[in-house]
Image (cartoon, rainbow, N blue to C red; front, side, top):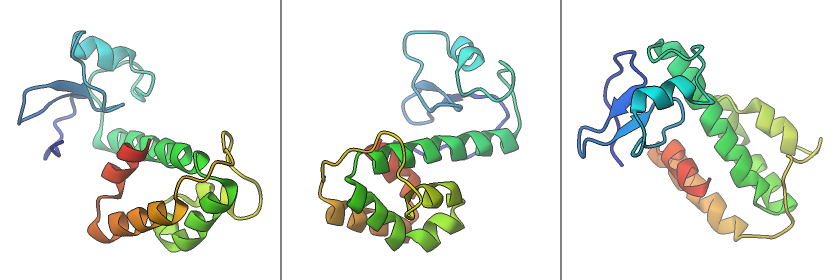
Length: 145
């Protein structure tokens, strides 16, 4: 993994380290197809199939991706563990704009797709705490999705 440092409005991104092309909408590699075609057809393209768009739409798209990944992660936790994680990190989730996710887990219901299987909730909570402290919460969310 390598962060990309600038944004030139083209949603076909090329890794400066290995040369791999990927889609900035979904952050998926484009190994077997033309990357521009993928970007045009990407289900998360917010620019009506255009290859170029604004930094604002890019940021909106990434927020949506992170939200989906967080919901998927919490959905794989047991109900009590997920609620505990959301309660513990309520302030951080609020600061990051995940108020809708807080509402799903604060006693007003549980997100769709939850299961009752516990997966080491305390370790996952510690992992989230480390992510928030070190500022790489999105990278770790990708790993859990």
